[in-house]
Image (tube, rainbow, N blue to C red; front, top):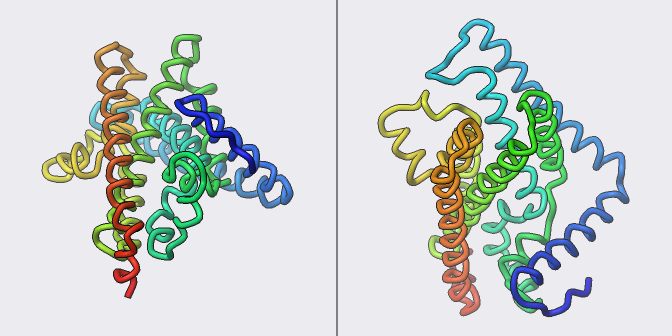
Length: 269
């Protein structure tokens, strides 16, 4: 794959586009497998909404959340997850790549090593999540031109917060050695808690979801902005998502210095 050395956002988006086309063309060589993964995840997400719909027939309101709010929670989360993990599928495998020395390949490529390593793999099941989110919003989100724009914006910002968190926890491998189990557990924790309304959690758990495990910025705040769009709330979401992205970028590249020095080889034993 040939990618020209162009700087700035234009070059980055061109790189993402080139990887996406390449990965998609490879996926379409096995159309049945690709389609089955996408449809399977779509059905899996749909079963969760069926569960919530049945739940709300018994309990119409849960801590101020109604069925419509839960549906929008899933619409936002699955689209953000689908786009980010669909494109940057290697994010959850960074710990493995670091430990196995497989970042070497990406270090010699033009442009940023983090971007290349994230784009090296695509999660096809995530496409099913993204499609599911769009369908749920189209059916239950009362779409208007303004709401569509807000929905897309908050979903992508929530997805950015999610992918940044995944990069951060996987980058711990640079400093702590083998953290694949820890990274996997933290990743699953974020996804799990993000599918529930934040208001049902109390005490220490809620504090953690606002800080150490930033689930609040992944799903709760995006849904709050979608429910009542205001510029301050949207600004808070954008600022927090980009702050997490900046932290993830800085942490990865700080750890990359240790990796390039060869110190990490000793951590595998």
